[in-house]
Image 1: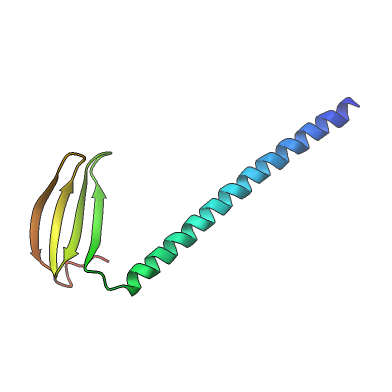
Image 2: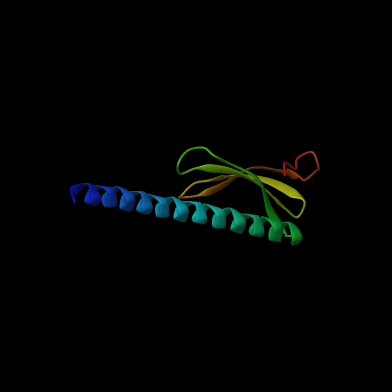
Length: 97
């Protein structure tokens, strides 16, 4: 009966690992589907403010290029403050979407 218990333990391990992989795939699939839905909603709405590009400098600081009222703003965002680095009129050449 010892070989039967070993076989049962191995099959149980394979089953549990398979369930974990299935859950991982399911979460990833739902996340991608959700992001696609959010992206399509954002495209349908003509928003007043939209982010053109963002870049992480390090774990706490990032630079964001956003457009508001046909003006592009380059912002430095950190946990303690926000600073406007530059602003200029929005043109189609500036749009990196």
